[in-house]
Structures are given as C-alpha cells and as structure tokens.
Length: 65
Image 1 (cartoon, rainbow, N blue to C red):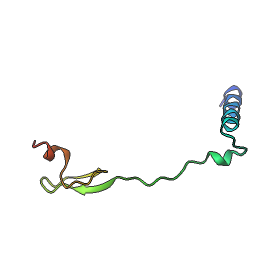
Image 2 (image 1 turned 180 degrees about the vertical axis):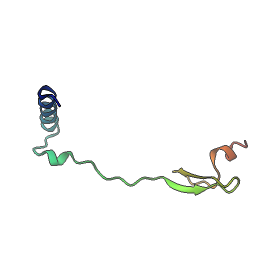
Image 3 (image 1 turned 45 degrees about the vertical axis):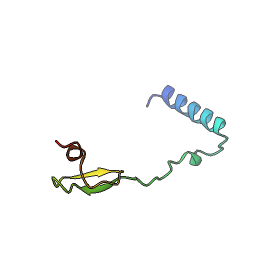
C-alpha cells in the first residue's frame, strides 16, 4: 500500500476509536455470531437447502411449482 493510504487508514482507525471511546485496536474485534441457518431436505422433491425458517418443503414446492 502506498504511504498515503496507510496514513489515511491509521487516521481513520484513530478517529473511529476516539468516537467509540476505545483506547486499543483489540477492541475492534469481530464478534463471533452463530448462524441461524440449518440444512433441510425437502419432503416433496428431495433437494437439500439452507433456511432459517421451520419448514419441511423448499420454496418451489411451497408455491406449488
């Protein structure tokens, strides 16, 4: 990265930490969040898909296609 971009990134990070009240960049960690998606096999056509809904059929079979 060019020096100008690095300086801008550091300035942005410092401004962000100042606004958020953080003193350390380690506080900028990403929070691990479990996904709500789970694998479901359609009872009508047999395809496997991921969804966050409580269902036994795929979208296509639900619509009757």
